Amino acid sequence: MNTRASTRPPLRPGSLLGALNPFRRRAGGEAARAAGRLARPIGPAHELDLVLIWSAAGLLLLGLVMVYSASIATAEGSRFTGYQQHYFLMRHAVFLAIGVGIGLAAFQLSMAQWQRLAPALFVSGVVLLVVVLIPGLGREVNGAQRWLGFGPINLQPSELMKIFAALYAADYTVRKLDVMGSFRRGFLPMMAVILFVGFLLLREPDFGAFVVITTIAFGVLFLGGVNVRVFALLAVVAVIGFIILIWTSPYRRDRLFGFMDPWQDAFGKGYQLSHALIAFGRGEWFGVGLGASVEKLFYLPEAHTDFLLAVIAEELGLAGVLVVVALFALLVQRAFVIGREAIKLERYFSGLVAQGIGLWFGVQSFINMGVNMGLLPTKGLTLPLMSFGGSGIVANCVALAILLRVDWEVRQLKRGATP
Image: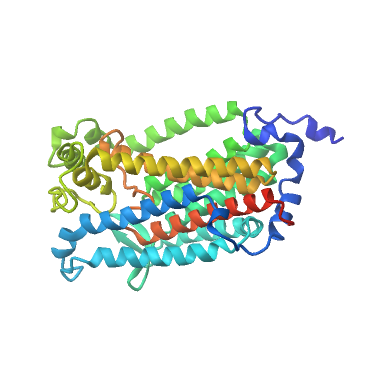
């Protein structure tokens, strides 16, 4: 018996990995090697989670329609788009096709291969976050330097970093299972890495991506068995840190005060939120009709990106918003179910990645919806799978492919397929 290991703080009993503590040592070994020997993914559609597939497809297709509806006026009235009303529709469709293509390729990689790639992908993401801050290399739009230009295409590294964070946090947790109850050896190294990533994101600045990536990383650690007292301390520190970040930044402070009472300065700090609320009010139960939104006619800024839900609310009403919420709820629920089933089969890395992706979609969609409804301060986060944005759509499609790969491998094992 390893007496040194037995003296370490135990895993939290309520965690999924804590419940399977006797099998911890096989997490990165037998299960990972078994994943690498799985056959190439073939078979009928019933070998995949149809609820997950249809909910994701529904969000992607509805997003395509609503991006077109929300962007027609902007595209027709801009010299940048050549006054072409289909400009954003065509670009979004191309990004969606590219995302599906890359997603199909990503699905071919086994989870063991993703686990081996996780550290390198995370390091490459950090490098991209550094490169985007170099003057002359990073592109600045509306005061934020978040994009790398490749001709007509802009790459946003923070979107890719969300996938890399989920993969790396899961790999780190699996490798450190024996010491996850220790603050110094289990929690502190990951905290240092995420703080460095957060520093780079805040330099862009991209506060929204910082919140999402932090939630993914530490959420995976929590599911992996981090001591609950350490996590509670982290929550307190995080709240204090966010307050300091907001208070020391004039534009974030203005957004907070504008959120608290958008009508006090409806043509200034509260402009976006006030028009989003008007859109929700006009939509009532079933909306004013597809394409009939008034707020998208140069009143509501970023109607096809950050405030797409407000256009959905105006044109499709409460019914349309509830459909979107239900589809996201289904997607997140299936992600956690898939993750739980993987963990039951001792495929810990796969299970944590699936749940990390579920956290990503759940938290980001919640923040975006909260901003649109006036429940949260205005923040530049898009609605996953739906809003316009090439990097975001591609990253979302790859995440879905990885989630489906986890589900496929779990179903193969349950069928008794020989690894």
